[in-house]
Length: 326
Length: 142
Image (cartoon, rainbow over all chains, first blue to last red):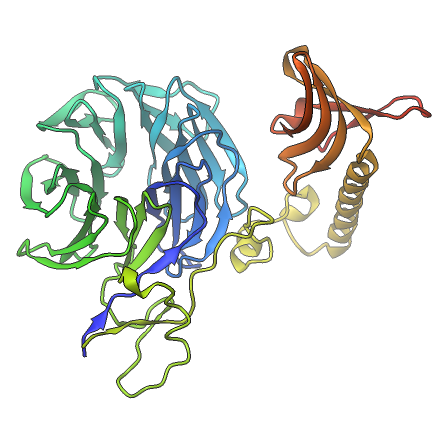
């Protein structure tokens, strides 16, 4: 019997959700942080979407958010020209890092000792979180606003994507460009998969996969609509993408075949990410919601329950408020 | 014919009254040892821990009573850049991030109702006075 996807809607934000990130798997499960134009990033339990807390303090739209692997620290990038580091257990603000323009991207090293930031002032900065009062190391070169800056290759290198239509690979110590990719249009998103060193880039209707060390192209796949974000499953068998037409698409990574598409959001999809265990993926939208989607539809996991044919379920209908969305 | 996957319940949404991060959650209790110096190293000296907890409770209660006592009183806020404004104190929000005041007297006019951000409250000093008592100066939290 075919099962239809029931996405779980996480409400609470009052403006578009523009970025989201999962932590690693911790003894307390895994966690999800969402960046929102309402200036109030939220932490949620990753497998259920249950709200845990809101990080209060930014005075402008939050454009980027990330968690460290252990989900003990969070970092956010905002339009108030600051990046902030937070205690992700207490919700307290730990550090405010002033910048000269809107900050768009934040990323911790594996050991959480350093924070990478990038934004509209076109400069990549590396902050030593053990010496926060020290001046950050700066990497210059991009000629337009930086959209995303990520640590890679065991935190020895940095990948950055900017509105100058380039993706650049930098050496952390020399701060020199190692390699560069140029595109005909701005890259809309970038995801780095350390296991296997894969880089996922989206631009226009294309989802492109590169080797993160060499920046050699592995493959490209075209979607039916303009794509804002894509994510590769940890096992590298599927990838998901979302964009302008409000839908989530699921593709087979090996064959590039479009497997499924899901309606649900009421606005363009800005970000999508697989959970660290690959059991679900989360999407953030212009409609102000996050939605959690099952990778294996119908499986018992988190708040989803597999109901076998003939089984009576108490729970089924109370949880599904908007059938037309499916 | 396909059927919708069953869900047990919807994800829990934000609490409208606070910012969350429940201090009673398993993760919080496990990862947030108390910041009290006597009890960070070991939990064996429960008498000392108890005393410090009582002191903390007393301080918290004193702070809350201060806020209650200030309600509807004329208050003077000493802010950055030597700005001083007077207003009638209303209330603080639960995280002491904002103060609700009325009849805020500013250099450019009187604001009937206003919210003052308390973000830099370490530098914020409030002088509370009423007509019958001489002014007393009360430090804010921490």
